[in-house]
View 1 (cartoon, rainbow, N blue to C red):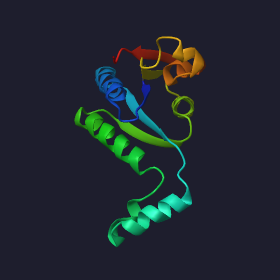
View 2: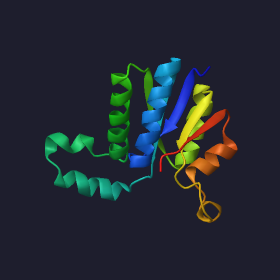
View 3: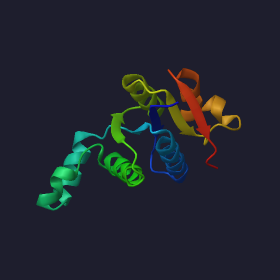
Length: 147
């Protein structure tokens, strides 16, 4: 059925529900789970300022993707506890592009996204991760009702 599944997360409640359901599906079909999270670049000046305020032994942890790494680690922990093979991907840039890129790179046969942002006129004005993924995916897409 499915051998490689991609799911994106930003740590929100709706994304966490999509991750939870992705873990359940991957466990049931024996698929590898690829967790993706995107981040925006942070200026070097801001990173330096934050480092100065941190204890010296913790300064190495301050980087442009620290929040994303924590989000991915938490989701990966849940997958491992469910005995699911999991790999994480932190990508700079647009979340939908990150999901699509990982799906293509990993040869995934399923992308799972939450439905948040799919309803109403806003999807036409602002765009949304599920909308963009569903239109540009290199494989099947499963849209999970998370709201």
